[in-house]
Image (tube, rainbow, N blue to C red; front, side, top):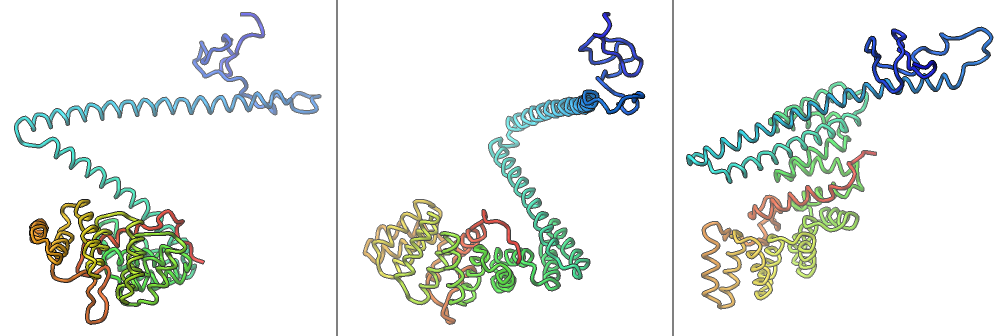
Length: 396
C-alpha cells in the first residue's frame, strides 16, 4: 500500500484502505482523528493547528452519527417486527371472527362497529387524560407559595380520583383546594364546567363567578356564567354576560338561544325571534328549527311554525316533541289527517305536558334543567364547546 494513502487504525495502528469503516485487523471503527492536539504538542509550536481542531470535531461528529445510525437501525428493526406481529395477530383475529360468524355465534358487522366505537372511546379518554394533566400543571403553577404544600396535595389527589372514575370524590378535593386558593381561575373554571355539564347551575355559578372575576375578558367564561345566571333567573346579569360573549367571541347557538329565551320571558317577541334565527344560523340543527317552530306556534303563526317543525322532523325522524307540536299546529289549522299522522309518528315519547316557553310561578323556566331534556343537553354541549380555540385562561 503506497505511503500516505492509508487509513491507520487508532487502536492497533494497522494500515487500512481509504473508505473502509472497520479495521481489518482488530475490528475497531476507524476514525479520522482520535488524539487531541494538546497531547501531541511539540516544542516550538506557537499555536494549535486549526486544521487539526476541525478534524477532531469532524471525528467526534462522525462517531456520534455512527452511534445514532445504529440506534435508528435497531429501532427500525423493532418496528418492523412489531408491524409483522400486529399483522399476524390481526389475520388470526379476522380468521377467528370468520369462523365464529360461520357458526352463527357473532355478527362481524356489529363486532366491527363495537370495536371502532371502543377504539374511538379509548382515544378520547387518552386525550382527556393528557388535557387534564396539562390543566393540573397549570393550576399548580398559579398557587401561592404559602398555600402550595396543602393545595398541591389536594389538587393531585383530586385529579387522581377523577382519573380513577371517582369523579364526585375528586371534585370534592378540588373544591377544598379552591377554598384555599379562591383566585385560581383555572381551578374555578374546571369545577364550574363540571357542575355546568351536569345541569347544576347553582353550584356552577359560584365557581364561574370566581373565574370571571379573575378573567373578565374571557368570552367562554362569560358565556357559561351568563347561561348559569339565566338558568337561575338573574336576567339582567345574564343579558350583560351573554351579549359580551356574542360581541367579543362571535355567534354560538348557546349564546343566542340564551338571549332569545330571556327575551321570551319578557314577552319581547321581536328580539326573541331575532336571537333564535341567529341561533339557527350559528348551528343549523333539528333543535334550532324546533325552537323557532315553538315560538311561531306561541305567536299563532302556524304556517311558519309548520315549516320549521317539518324541517326539524326531516332532519331527525325520531324527534318526538317536534312531531307532537307539528300535530298541534296541523290540528289548529284544520288539517285533521296530517295531525293524526304526526301524532302517530310522535308516539308515546312525545313531551306533551309543558309547552317550551311556558313560564312557571316564579316567572321563568330553567334553561338547562327544564322539561325539554334534549334541548338542555344540546345547550350544555354547545356552550362547553364554544370558543374552544381561544387560548387557555391565564389569571392576572
